[in-house]
View (cartoon, rainbow, N blue to C red):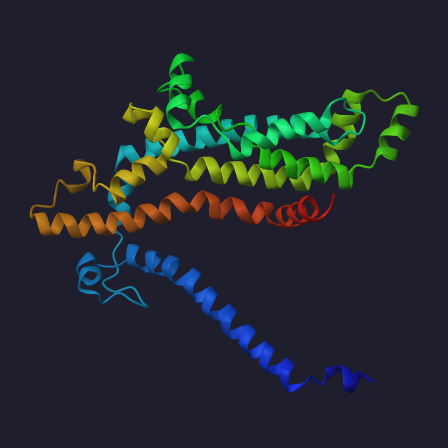
Length: 298
């Protein structure tokens, strides 16, 4: 019996081979650009420009990282991004959870009308100019609130968390708790939140990634360079070649400056990605569980 189970038809074997081949190709397409950026950040910029850097680093150097870490603009951007991501995640997760929980309760009056109203905002918005005018009238231009408040409530995230509550927190649990004299507030804080660590971890990861990678809102609402997040600083380096002159004091020719700028670009990408690479392993086990439960049930 076991021998028969182990045997595969020729079609199954070909399916496995083709599947493995396609997955390997996709993996290479995803990983190679990241690998190239990593090895290029440690390579001599002359080798990068000549196209010699492909599979291995050539002319190993830490010059790019030394210039990056000696620049105060990078550190200011780092500090700003940590502040924006931390505060924005705290506000965003709180708004999402507090909005999703009552929508998951069957006894909420007008729940369907509220959900329809929220879903309409997923398809229609006021647009960039009205949003900018609103932020301006609220005196939030060039402040942290312009970055963390407008995106605090995501309907998509609310639906995911609501679905999780509906599938993972049964009404019978509330009925049993209410019989023991548990109030709605205590039930939420003492029972619902401890049982929702996985979906909260997912929301934390979503918000942190969103705030950390976001630069467009800062580009629109911020005009003080001391308040730029790291991604906006990085954008100026990558797109506009606006490298701080302090990084280039010892570089004389224009061609040499372009080569060093290229090296700084690769190093800045690695430096900006490190916090997320460090954070993800701690949330991975919750991330997989939360996404699956919140997406396929309810």
